Image 1 (tube, rainbow, N blue to C red):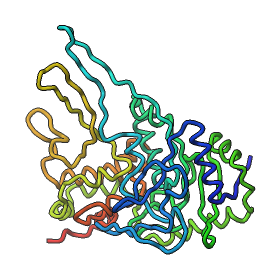
Image 2: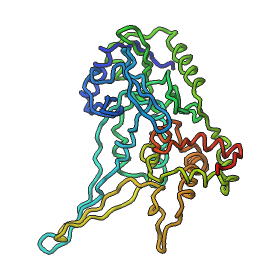
Image 3: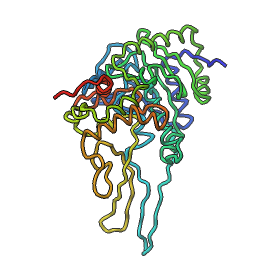
Image 4: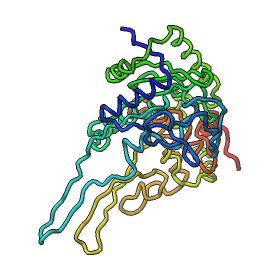
Length: 374
C-alpha cells in the first residue's frame, strides 16, 4: 500500500511537536550553540537554527548564516544520537554499608520517551548500526534497550552536503530510506519553506494524520529523489566499502600506517564524535569513609593505550597499531562481523580530527598502494 504523503508548513511542524509532547515525548531539535549545532530540548520551530549552516572541512567547523529561512540546511554536527542512546557515563550500581550490613543497589534503566526533529540520514543509519550491536546481538545492552524503546525519529533528507560527507558511498544518505518514524524534505519557498512529509512507521503515520496537513502534490516525491541524487553526485569523498576488507587485509604491513602514526595524536576525537563507536570501560569509585562505592560505565576509545591492557601490558602499544585497528574495524571488520560497515559516511572523524587526518584519503592511498611520505 502506498504511503500517505503530506504537505506541511511551520504551523504543522509546531503542531507535530505539540502532539508528541502530549504523547509524553521530550522533544529535541538542532539548536545553534556558541560554536556548533547541538541537540537540545525544543518546544516550537522558533528554537531551530533558521538560516544557519555549518561549513566543514578537515579540522574545520564554522557556523555561518545563509541569509535564507531554511531550518535544516546543515550537515551533521559534533553530537549524534549516541549521546542519548548510549550515554557517555552511566552508573550501573551503588554499594552501601548500613548498620554493619552490606547492600548492593542496582540501577535499573528507565525508559525515557524522546522525539528528535531534524535527524540526518547518516544518523538514522548510525542508530541502525548501534541496534545491530547493542540491541540485536546475543546479549542486548539494557541501558541502550531502555533508551531505544522510547525513541521517535523525524529525519530530514539532505539536499546539500558538507565537504566532508561521503554517505553516498555507505548508502546511508543523502536520502533516508528506512529507520525513521517520519521523514521530511525541506522545500525552500521564500520566507516560508514547506515540507514534504512521509511516515516510516505506524506511530509516525498516526501523528502526521493528527496534524491536519493536506496531501502533498504527487510530483514532490520525484523532486525529492532528484535533489538527493544531485547532492550524492556532488560529494567529493568516496570509499569503496565492497573492496575494504581485502584492502585492509593486504595492507596490514603497509608503510602508510607509519606515515599516519606520525600525524595522529591518538587523542580519540574521532571515536568520541563517531556515531557508531560503542566501546566502554568500567570505573569503580569509593567514598573516603569506605561506606559507599559506585560502578560507572564510561565511553572508551581504542586510541588509548590502556584500552587493550591485560596482565603484563597493552596489546597495541603504538599509535600505528591503534589507528590501523580503528580504520580496519570501521571499514572492513565490522562488515565481516555484522554484515554491514561500521561507518555511515557522516565525515565527523574528518571534521573533528585536530591533525586533519582524512579516513577516506588514507583508505584510497592504501587501496592504490601509495607509498608513505618520508
